[in-house]
Length: 486
Image 1 (cartoon, rainbow, N blue to C red):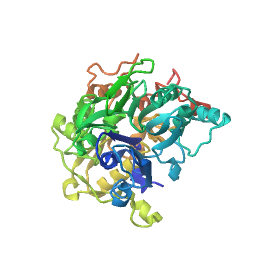
Image 2 (image 1 turned 120 degrees about the vertical axis):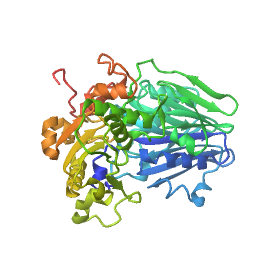
Image 3 (image 1 turned 90 degrees about the vertical axis):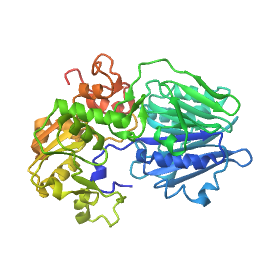
Image 4 (image 1 turned 30 degrees about the vertical axis):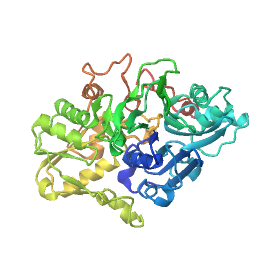
């Protein structure tokens, strides 16, 4: 499924969203609501697996939005039972842009001790090596997804029960994984030892739920209990409740800092902090580091809005909605001819000319990836009569690809990997361009002393090129890691 237009093609794509619930009637309905709240993490496809004591396991996997599929009574009636898990997908491995239905999670496997389903958010960095080994030993893969390796590793494990087999499998896996899984009676949640991707625990009535973000708990009226810790596995049953243990060797946490900047919804809580307040703090820090002589501060909607508010509050420059987003713009509704493609951003964003004309404008965005969108937005602002355009970016330059579950362009296609800041100013033809510093970003997320260079508190590989887990598959394919000179 190709991007709808250039605006979509110039953003880092959210990884995936996972949700699970147990101990409630019609659990799949709760999962569908949770996935709807997590739709921003994956819009390509979605799936739900449910278990009913009488009917056993049932699943439904569909392309497109949750609202277009899992609001159908005909589909939901096929998913009875008090236990269910679900997944919304944006492909980061496998057949990107050409997803087959077999790639859509959750994946299901039938083992000697019963069936199990698994939904995975993240990316397995040694998946190619694992797949080769498993195929040589007789495994038959059904999908192109790295996540299927986990099911095959579980099948080959000699452990006694499914949670133990999952532990055994995940010890072989490198990279990032937050997992929600289920058996006939258990809901299971696991985070990798570095805790790169998020996973939270909630209480809903007499039942329990697991989710990528707290905003999905709100939609079903669940109480946020806590985050699943890095390296933790929770097994939830009706009789024993939540049982927790730590099957992996402890390591310093490396949560993805870009979750704070862009991926998570602003109404979620991460690490005990409001995502919205963190993004506002990023804007304040940006204003301190990179002031501008301007008349108004405008966000590039919607992800730049909290940072723009923070920039305005700190700088004293009035905040204005200088760009209006068409909220009803989904995929391009006209056959994407070259003329329509050239309209690109204008199909989604429109300049508020009355506010912009004759003004010196600070435009606040969350990131610059390829730079194509930034350039088009700048042209729109100037066409509307702006006097000057100053870009302020609420993240450091994105100069390295992510291999932990985010769909990032190849390094040579990242603007910051091929140009200096001064060169980017000329390329984008703006009056000024400034990114928040890496230390400034760390301060904004609550690290008052900034980034610990000896042992960074977060995964910031997309900015620093310092990968907490060597991306073995990519290195094998020729990817060059950062050298000491860089």
